[in-house]
Amino acid sequence: MPAKCAAPRATAHLSQEYRTPAWEQRKLSELVEIERGGSPRPIERYITDDPCGLNWVKIGDAPELGRYITQTTEKIKPEGLAKTRQVYPGDLVLSNSMSFGRPYIMAIKGCIHDGWLLIRDAQKHFDPIFLCHMLGAPQMLNQYRMFAAGSTVNNLNKELVGKAIVSLPSKDEQREIGIVLDRLDSLITLHQRKYDGCANPLFLERRISCRKPSHQNRCSATTTPSG
Image 1 (cartoon, rainbow, N blue to C red):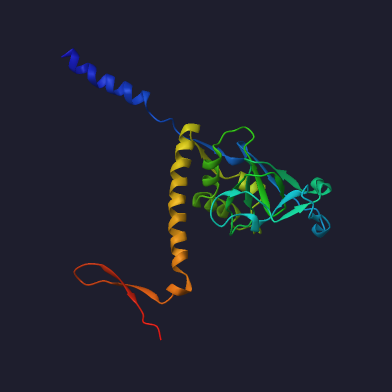
Image 2: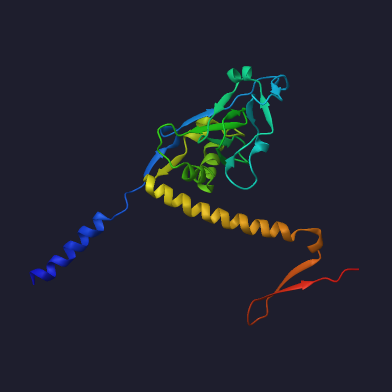
């Protein structure tokens, strides 16, 4: 009889030992630095072709697919640095447009104008890939919209973004989540590229028609004759 009673206690001990720690809930502003970019004006006076100029990060430099900013099309003179904000590899930047709001990871050093927000994890609370995915999640965008509701705020600002409540898993969990989400993104990108290839004018006459008979669903590809 004592042996039978010991098993449940051992099972309970094991479940506690391997239990995943609860995710802490915190305001984003308590975990990272959030600052708005700045622009030396008039900007035309600071744009330079000098290779030694500072990378000038514009919205158009962000890749359509992927999450890293690796190059810029323009540079500014070093004397403009006092009127802008410098970013470094590993920093995240977030467009302050409420309709955009997509985060990117800096892979180069540069300067950001006031259309960007800098997100700097100086205390290393986050895995950068996890943080990037989290900042662009629908739940975060919904929080931004909720905080901005009823106000004249049309764009994101540091106060609004800083109020967002975020989950803080362990670093190991963050890395695992980041790996899974990256794999999912890669799969989506692969299919998107295949789709874009089928959008070539040579294939525009191809039509996909889905017929739904009463007994089953059936999809068939048909080609419209040319001429």
